Length: 595
Image 1 (cartoon, rainbow, N blue to C red):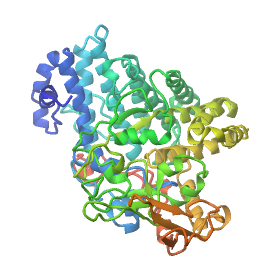
Image 2: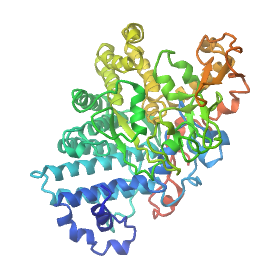
Image 3: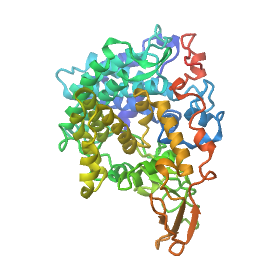
Image 4: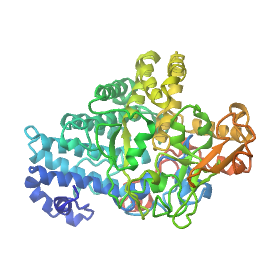
């Protein structure tokens, strides 16, 4: 889709205007919109241009995606170890200021999201005015995609900043400077927008337009609407404290039935438009292999070109230098909290996909082996250069950001059913998630017995909270979910105590081995390790080349544990609006929450 039409339409209709004098002059886009938005090929280029803002230098590509979503009870940004006043560490450690050096630029993600919103607004206006959407299915689909892309930008603005500026029409001279509003009003608009969008957009694979996960489809739209309904009715920090919305239209009683029906609509399409992958690892291998075919588990991905996007380079397994798998030494800027490795059932196949206890050593003659990491710096394993089918030499790896997958729909359905209809109604959905996590031979114990024992609503909810961690660690979903559950600080504090218990090998971690034994396999690159699993305490010094103390006060320090946050997370759930935008707002923008 990156062709001459695309470039032409960007130049024609997509300038982000900011000058009052310019806005007082009729824009060329207004003159040409009657042709642009009544011609499907031209309109497609304009709608594709909405996505361009994801890839801008300081947008999702290198600011929002690498920094948002940490620290949680299961995830940790390693820059937090650099201290409270480090710009990167402050973003994750709940101590960012409006002057943050990493973010306080005029082309930051905040501005780029509003650039995407402005482009969407122009497309929405043009398609509604000239698209004849009642009679032209393709132009109707493009309207649905435009509404959805705008909702995505707003979803991410709301996650990071809470109350933000409402812009649902193209900018005019009268609307250059507008104050932020309560997130409640924005949630209501995008929830309604997504309902409308789903009427226009086909299911995955239903038409050629929805053949890949780089274009939004009905399953994703419904899933995003469910996610937004749950966030809107959940807890979050308002200027007067952490609470649910007081808007009568955003209550759990109103929002949860809508969200449940959206999830059930998608689940009804299983085997036709959506599908859980047979193996958990396959989800992430396909992502790293640039497999963008729709109809599987991935529902929508931020579509980065090969030269854009820092997904693997931020969250992949660490490569110390260029080697046989990558032309650049990158990865490992964040990772899982160590107690999570031992919270997984040892038979849970998700564990060794999600958490990696090694990095790739410095290469010699272009070849690097794996080398043991340490308990403080484990790595996310869902993104790996070694799974890519092309080798990158840049910090931009081009692997798409998987924004939503079908497993989230199923687990949301479990949570919604539990709240509305009780644990018996929730059980089939939780079982479905766990069935993939374990070999079929273990289903009786690990799936049926486990889930059937959850006979109260509270027990089922707690199990879903745990399952969410096991399923989505490293995917930047946890922070918003903990916030809407009102469990952010509670769960981080619980994780801190678990890490102390793990370090001391007491309580639930008393049977965790203190020592590891390891060797390189015959292939010269694969690390073989004994002592990672509970109960593996035999002396294996005669069978392995090396051994090391894995868990101790030196290996898991107070600093690593205590730098999960520098301020109470429940008082700093959102980033501040950066000072550059405050200063240029003509007095209309201010920060809350003590910023």
